[in-house]
Length: 422
Ligand code: EPZ
Image (cartoon, rainbow, N blue to C red; front, side):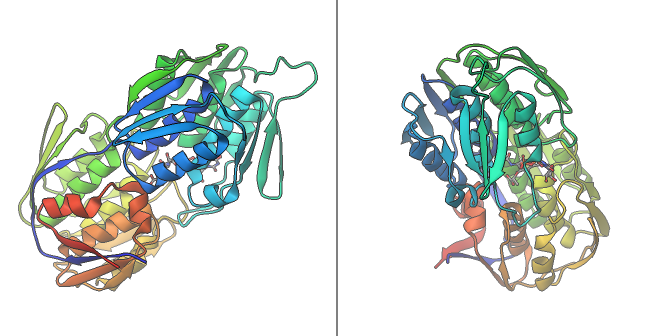
């Protein structure tokens, strides 16, 4: 089991290059199933989740070549329509093959994703939407079996009006992909507005899909017979960007992010300014300067464009050493405070009541041995380690490797004293 050892107290200075967005790359790789033509995808991050998704698609018959951040994929010879449990259980985003498989091949067998550390995370909205589009779905032995009715149907899903009870990012993405090849028009109401949904829509439109309204809560897709290949470049990762900015705001210093975008980080940049950071942004760069102790900031997570749940844990680390106390309300997932226990081991003062945590800022944290529990919680613990006095050793950092490309290399470059130990 690999660990990260961090000696806290260094300020962060210098430039860091932001990678492509994990949560845009995952659905866009699945979009490759929608055509027999070749897709050339650029700026694909080198992450464990992306590697898992590639393996899943390859075992279905997708031809995939990787060179650096370029991935060339072709679903001309798909032989298997299955997403087996052993792959889905490590990466819930595997559910994103369901919509494309049913839309193009009329059938799919996808394992139900198990629960995960941050919540039960059901996929009922994905299933309900496909049923509304005419798919017959039954669940047995932990698998979702979906197929188009044999009798009479023209072998295609049919356009439908679908209302999401809850805003679901991958739910929106799954059904948007399925609808591109459906017979007729599909309208997704209460759709997710995340930038990664827009990036997927841009890629699908470039493949010939007829999609409008992406980025709003109502997305309209007019089905077409076929989609064609495309060359597409993944958007920058806004959560990786936010994570580095919060790290510098907590540790102090002056960093510049390159190959990123500021227009998709409004609420995060606002909170960092409120905490006392000086932020300037222009082109594909964001600069943050922080001197002195941050001020505590209240947070309430909600679907985009509100404050992102994927940044909640990182800001909690900042609040642990901030001046004053802060209220953190997590409204998306029912169990996304797993990092609290670990932060307490570093001396943090946090009281949790249901989905609300009250963090009383302390002047210092003390380094200790702690354990990562999920992807963004591990990022929070890295930030806490950067500011804690003495050494912090973080175990189970495979969680971190799922979503952050070479994080210790990037942090070392900025002056952090961090190394991977066996
Ligand atoms: C996506 O997960 C992201 N993952 C998550 O990022 C992110 O935290 C989440 O959106 C919220 O922004 C990817 O894009 C691959 P949801 P997703 O469906 O789509 C409930 C990370 O750190 N729900 O938007 O799985 C669900 O339980 C990961 O990169 C249903 O009840 O999240 C949750 O409470 C972690 N039924 C809420 O909706 C459904 O059918 C939002 O979930 C679907 C969702």
